[in-house]
Image (cartoon, rainbow, N blue to C red; front, side, top):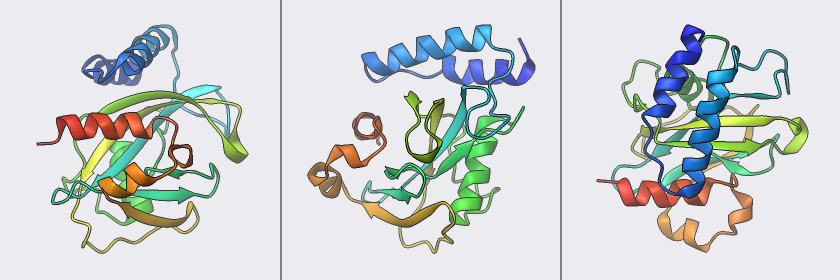
Length: 189
């Protein structure tokens, strides 16, 4: 197994699934990682047709709200994030994306070292036609912190409180966001 793929295998192996669907995604991903030599997107949007993504989910440690972005391509409220570059560590991707999309310094120590959630999703929007295997990382950040948002990636960013999420139409989010939210709420200190 390629060293960078083995690193991802280790991260996925260490995840504790929150529900049956995350357990299925974990099993499917581990099987894929054992078979695939290259799991990184090489040509946008879909070569190879299944590839790694790192989401970075800003969470306010005071009120538990999360920052989501109105993603231009997908047309959904998503966590910031992006594709893992060839042989890049997914945690490094999360840090890089936090910097590129939000202006959070890469060496801030605010991004958790290990992913909190795993999903396998058919992409939607302009770049539909491929599968994203997404590792969801937490970025613990006070909502009062000044962010520098990437207007090339999304229309706007918004802090969502628990009440906002409960009142929202779930079809406006990543299809796995509500499950992520439930896991986050169960595991939050």
